Image (cartoon, rainbow, N blue to C red; front, top):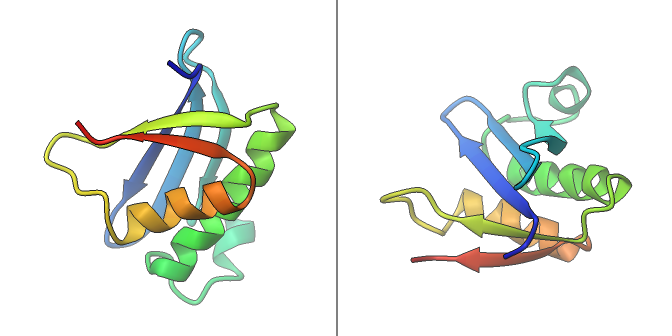
Length: 103
């Protein structure tokens, strides 16, 4: 198992994601569309471009915290498509290797 986990929360109003160390339960990197610096740049805080921006920012902050690989396990009854896939794909494109567990 990878020592870092990815947690993504998407509501109708905003998107937030964090990378957490599995053993110490310490959040290494956090990004959300409710923060002032991000919400000033985005048109909408809950669409696909917002998810891509969150993934890019989270990847930058994760690399600063020496995170290069993480795992994502979907929530119960959750789907791996649309906005969640956009966040994970953006993280992968920006240098964080994500292992996705769907079962």
